Amino acid sequence: EAGVAQSPRYKIIEKRQSVAFWCNPISGHATLYWYQQILGQGPKLLIQFQNNGVVDDSQLPKDRFSAERLKGVDSTLKIQPAKLEDSAVYLCASSLESGYANEQYFGPGTRLTVT
Amino acid sequence: AQSVTQLDSQVPVFEEAPVELRCNYSSSVSVYLFWYVQYPNQGLQLLLKYLSGSTLVESINGFEAEFNKSQTSFHLRKPSVHISDTAEYFCAVSDPPGGYNKLIFGAGTRLAVHP
Image (cartoon, rainbow over all chains, first blue to last red; front, side):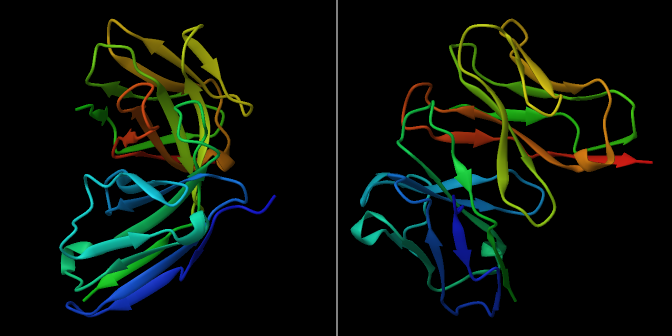
């Protein structure tokens, strides 16, 4: 079974530029998550989708971050414009459903450096 | 809101020695607790979880964790570590319990096993 795929693996941009990350979840997984992991901290949930609807985006900085999950499969996370403090690893995860008993499977992440 | 504290940012240990990675959470109400492991250049993987029932849970590779409600702790232990256990370990709690499977992570503990 293929795991969660993410691209690119690394990205370096200058502040005020825009960037987009792509995630392909495990086939059949209805729930998709985007996390931000700043160096020295644990992952922090940015947004959670159930199929193509948003169930939690309370910690997403909506003035600069946006995410979509078209057709309930792939997802894209965008930052525009980027700030220095956005430097982090962006993790995508998926699970069969959204209940607590459903294990979240994580992708390898995209490491973003903003200079 | 829930919070998770991992008391040690780094734990160095010699191969075949026992190890304990400490985790405390903030809430005294019912919770679901998880340990995730992140090997170098890989995504997070679920190591073990406590949902209900026996307070001692085990993983397939020899780790175990004990849920202690009175001390609000979920420490991870292994009686004899291997070089291959070198990784970062994250403790997480569900928030809210039984909800949309939102996880709150601790800052992580880097386990370094030396020969």
